[in-house]
Image (cartoon, rainbow, N blue to C red; front, side):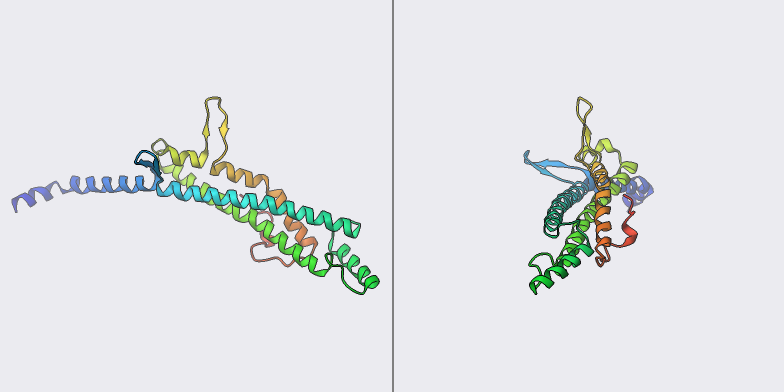
Amino acid sequence: MKFFEELTGSGFNIEYSEIIRSHEQVQDSLFDSYRCLITLKMKGLAEAWLRVKLEDAEADMIDFGNRSKELENRIEKAEKVIGKKFSRDAVFEFNDQYISKNNKEHPEINKSFLLDACNQLRRTWTSWYNGSIHAKAGKDYCIAFDRVINKLDYPEVQTLCFGTTNKNGKKRVRSLKNKVNEFKDMKLQADQVIITMRELSCKESVEVSSDLLALPL
């Protein structure tokens, strides 16, 4: 009994010591990276999550580029068929004239072509928007990390968030910070997709609303 009385008399230090230890363990589990069996690298929870955000953003950026190119090629092909600049009125005019001459719709350039084009435009813009959200979510986490965590303790997370500089002073750009900037650079192209949707009188989805045209990153 005497032992426990003595122990509780200095209980603050004992309890605070355990709090400190628990805090460090939680912090390391979130941010630290380490190697297991020399070759197997284990990621902390934060690094693993941030890497997923970066990979998601990169996948959507590639998808946006691919869809944009497919859309451009499809419009160019349509313009060759109708013989003028692609527009909603041009498609309807061509379709009406073709039906008058042939008693049937053109196999490619018809009313359903506009619906397909609208769906393709919507999917293209959504790829850019979703990717920008992934990148921004990761960057927001990184900013919070940078404000309260000693970045020198967790270089892997720091590198993933903000990149590194090599011996020649050249920035390595594969980081969440730079990924957000890349999406910003593509914003005019993404906005043009929405403008084209409006010119074609496409029905906008919830994700592609007029309020998002000037969406900041």
